[in-house]
Image (tube, rainbow, N blue to C red; front, side, top):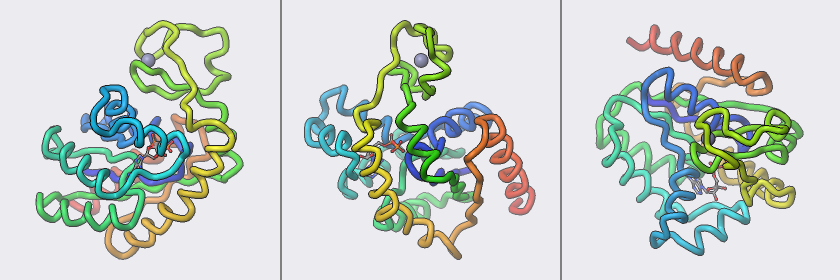
Length: 220
Ligand code: ADP
Ligand code: ZN
């Protein structure tokens, strides 16, 4: 199964991708995580990438396409993957289609998670991330907690620079302008499964797995 996880920032893509990755036993490819790691490792994608991300703007398409190609070839993506954060523009979507064709990948499905904008803003402003395992939590669930419930790291929580109020607004604008059209690109080209993300993590996950099961039954 190859899942292209689509949705606005804060809709729960990262959280769901991690659960699906472990349940379905396929790699989770998060372009956001790859970029943040590259910045930490001080690769050539250093300062400018960091500034762009901190402002909530998009990294140029050519850089992102290189990253995806590199990741596809390096990581064991032959048996499936969950792509989280890519494609974010129609140019990226077109390039991904070429890559899918080149590698003759089958069973590609788009899972689009949706939620109302006010809910999304609330979640992003309330988000803490573990810098060790990259798990995502809300400030409420970590009140008086100092050890990461997922990986056991101590004092590893931080607020992403792009989770500030100003930048959140910009990220949503960027999503509406540049990323939303990607869904139109896929209409008629690929199966798109819509999931209401305005529910508990467990419920949303259940719904995704149910839909994926139906997709598998109908496509095998
Ligand atoms: P979120 O989905 O919560 O916005 P991500 O961790 O997926 O967070 O992405 C963080 C930032 O990384 C984006 O705001 C953008 O600057 C950059 N980024 C990630 N993926 C892409 C992409 N495919 N194209 C351009 N920029 C990207
Ligand atoms: Zn952790």
